[in-house]
Each structure stands twice: as C-alpha cells, then as structure tokens.
Amino acid sequence: MIAATRLSAFRDLSSLAPMRLFVFLVILFFAPTAMAGGAWVDFFSAEGTVIRGWLATPSGKGPHPGVVMLHSCFGPATKSDELATHDSAWVNVLTKAGYVVLVADSYTPRGQGSLCQVRDRPVLARAQRPWDAIGALQFLQERSDVKADRIALMGWSNGAISLLWTIRKDASAATALDGPDFRAAVGFYPYCNDIQRQIPDYRPRASILLQIGANDDWTLPEPCRLLVSGTQSRGGDMTIDIYVGAFHLFDAPDTPLRQIMAVGGSDESDMNKIHFGTNETAREKSIQRTLNWLADRLR
Image (cartoon, rainbow, N blue to C red; front, side, top):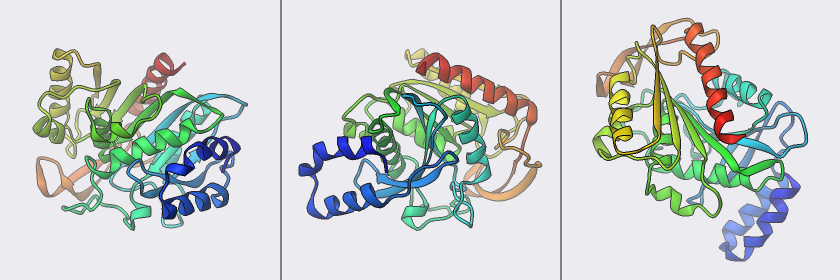
C-alpha cells in the first residue's frame, strides 16, 4: 500500500493472532496503490474485521490533514464498484482543498448493498460503523503524508448517525484508540431521534457541525435542533446549520428532486415516501461552511 504503513505496522505484528497476522500481511503487500483519482484499499476496522475504503490524496508532498468519510445507507459503491457520485463529489472537494480522504465502506465487505429500504439492518450506525470509523482513523495515522493529529470525521445520513455515535463521550469504539482522536466532525442530515432517545445527556469528544435541510422529511431537522441545543446546554461543542427550502441529500450534485420509499421519516419503523435532491444554494453554502469549519480546526 504505502511504505509508511508497512514500516509502522510492523511495530505491532507480534500482538496479532496468527490468522489475523496472515490477513494483515496480504492486505499490506497486495492491496492496490491509491492513484490521484483514488482507489479501494483494505484495512482493519478497530474491532478486527477487514473492510475497505476509497483512498484519495491531494497534490503536493504533505504531510496533509485528513478526513474520514462515512457513507449514507445507499452505500458508497456503484454497480461497477466505482465510488458513488455523491461521495466522489465530496472527495474531489476535499482533496482539492488539500486533505487526504478515506471513505470507509461499511457495507460491501460485509456483503451488503443499499440498506435504505431494510428495516432490520445487518450493519448498524451504533454498532459496527463506529469501529470502522476508528479503524479508518488509525489507517490514515499510519501514513507519512497525513498529519496524525489533524484528522476530521464526516458523515451523511446513516453515516452521520454513525458519526454521532463515534464522537460521543465514552464511545465504546474509542477504547481502541492508540493515537490522537478525531479533531473535528461534520455531519449531514443525521437521524437525531436515535441519539435523543438513547443518549439523553449526549456530549461529544470533538466539535461537531451538523447541516440539514429545513424541508428534510427523511431525517427531520427538529430533533437535530433539540439535540444541539441540549448538548450546548451541557457544555458540548456542537453547532447546527439548517438550510431553508432544502431536502435530504441537498448537497448531492445534479440530482433532481424526487421521491422514494425508504425506512424513516415521521414513522421511523416503517417505509415512507420521502424526498431527496439537490438544492444548489444550500449545496454551495454547505461546501464553503464545511471547508471553513475544517480549516479552522485542522490547519
């Protein structure tokens, strides 16, 4: 994969079980090299599962700050196993701004495609995915072209819920950290009802910016507004931007507003007709807001 990962990885080889060590060496020496446009690479989730991510690097020698991206319930891969358009657009934005980016794929390595229409999901935002996020953080920290203490976490929809679970104080996955933590986080339209219900005293370990459309009928904005105000009242560093006239996936490029049936919305346990699509004004504002937020915390 890369020389820095190989060299630093050998420090801990003696602690790996024999089978895991074998898999690790296969990954280390036979995974594809990430070219300028990006490539899939394999790495360990922090709970030990081998998963993969789309790795893309900016121009210049570095070291650069980094970003781990967590995809939505649609998954990050196309049928031809390329990076999906929405995720690819953000990778391009971030790499042009000078960030090394890793899109952690929690679905494909576990044999899953889109889970947006699945009620009982086999891969959960509060279970497997926070461990994937920590594993992706550690993967980037092994690279010589990444500033190990300047890495942010970003997530969209189900990935944003995963972000909230990952960044929360006393998160189980955080016990796997053996280096610096995420320095900041940006989440787009998470399903905040989940956090509100299960962690009423929520507090994050790093500053979080949430961005959501005022018209979002898939992941409703009001629970997120309440989550942010409650977190702030407890001294937590969390901010929310709500974009007027915007629906779910407002930041996706060139996506006409449409309706689909999906699990969530006002009745979280059932299939509902929801809207998603581009709002160009909100999209442009959210990109600039994200870049400013990351620059203030990672540069």
